[in-house]
Image 1 (cartoon, rainbow, N blue to C red):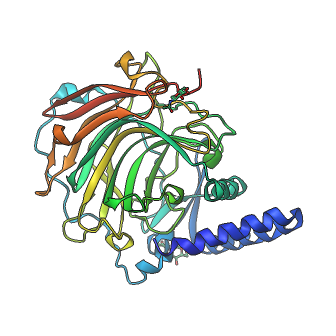
Image 2 (cartoon, rainbow, N blue to C red; image 1 turned 90 degrees about the vertical axis):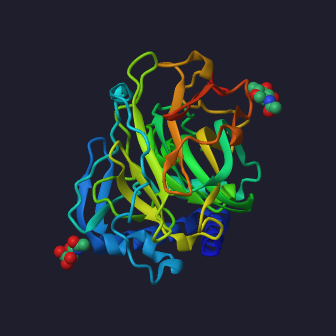
Length: 383
Ligand SMILES: *[C@@H]1O[C@H](CO)[C@@H](O)[C@H](O)[C@H]1NC(C)=O
Ligand SMILES: *[C@@H]1O[C@H](CO)[C@@H](O)[C@H](O)[C@H]1NC(C)=O
């Protein structure tokens, strides 16, 4: 992403300023205040969510995505031109698993909710760490998939894995897709549940969408870097997912669907049993996945400066072999095929596994007409 380089340069400069001395801190503060003032200018309503999150409703046509130079002439698409065809009817028993809730914000028509960054200092520090960190670490467990695909859908079991508050690591349960020849020349998109204390300032499971250019240092979450165009006036990206699953108790899932719009080539994200659209990544921000994706990953991963040396929990924090109600799962995994239909992924192109089986495992891998299913997770180095 060419436009990200200046951002990185700015961050590096900010770091240098910070490194020189404390008095320049005011400089950083002023920059934040400027951007906040700019935002306020466009805020139509501010909504305080139970628990302390604050969302600003801003005009759908002035949302952060449109600061991306690649979207200068972009015409907003308010709804997908079509949704992938569901080729099976779920039996009633399939519905017995309760859906958890994404944060629902009631923004006025014509506006969308943006989570206010009330913990800017943390975020600045985090970004600097990521950029200068040479020892970037990542581990995971789940299914890697290597085939042409145009979307994916799955039910993600939601837990809040333990991540040490001061660690700057992330523990994610998500579905994601990538396109491009190899790392460094690859675009990626994904959505799911994150525990990311150094980002959100707490240990809750929160719903995020993200995209990147294949370089692990440049993951863009929600509206952080301009690119994701939100159309839903009610889904609060970055908000808490509630309720979450309890070990040996009720298991909650969230349905997530990502798919390519056949007319506009934009990549949509939708959620829930009704596939309610949240928004999309315009095709024009990508270099390598304009037409299709070549890879998918379903499962969990941990990422950050200590993700391998002092690994957080993944999933429920319990190994996959514990099975239902104890280990975390992703089920009804499907892909969107070239005919715009939801289909079971090709088993010969699916590679279940984990990066280090003494920390995390994946097992009970299974395939039927409703898709693929798998348990995954583990304690990491936290016992
Ligand atoms: C936001 O509020 C301003 C001022 O009340 C109004 O002019 C504008 O149309 C509103 N924008 C939207 C998208 O509702
Ligand atoms: C796997 O994790 C264990 C426990 O943290 C560690 O001792 C071991 O070195 C790791 N193995 C690899 C191949 O990284």
